[in-house]
Structures are given as structure tokens and as C-alpha cells.
Image (cartoon, rainbow, N blue to C red; front, side, top):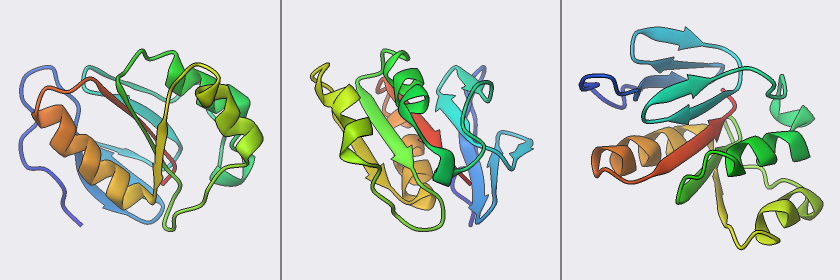
Length: 122
């Protein structure tokens, strides 16, 4: 599924998603990515949704983004409350959805100039 056509100068957007892979600008990712409009982070993230943990949510929180998205793969899966409490204890909310929805939401919010970050598992 194609999600975005144009990236704009120096911006990162999801151009396509299919289960198991994300295309961000012209690069294909088959691992988890932490996406911000200005950069893509792949280091120190869990290898799969099943391994998702506190370290991952902390990295998402450390982006300083106003809107935090979590794409959990082909289907929506809610993380354990013990992990989400890390965000709640800081007064933050994480929107949990399948990765297709997270990618689309990221593209829309970034195009509006919103301060958004998305942690997505293909």
C-alpha cells in the first residue's frame, strides 16, 4: 500500500507499507524503526513486536514529540500495562495501532507540521 508520494527536502515519510517491510523515503526497512520527520532511528530497538519492552517505550518518550504513535505490526496489539505506565507516569499518552494505521497517521501529522514520532514494527 502506497502511503505518501512526496518527501519534501530533508524530511522522512513512509512511502509504502506491507506486512514485514516499510519504505521510508527510498529505503526499505524490515526491522523496527523510530521515525521522526527529521530522522530515522533503528539502533537499540527490539527486534520484533514480541520483544517490545520498556527500553523501546523510553526511546519513544525521549524524542520529545507531542504525538507518540506505536505501530504493532500487521495487527493491533496492546503492550502490557506495566510498559505503558512508563509513559503515563510522565503524563504522556501513546496511541497504539497497527503499523499501516501508524504509518498513515504519521504522514498526515508530519505534513501538518506536528511534532510526531512513530515507533513501528513492520
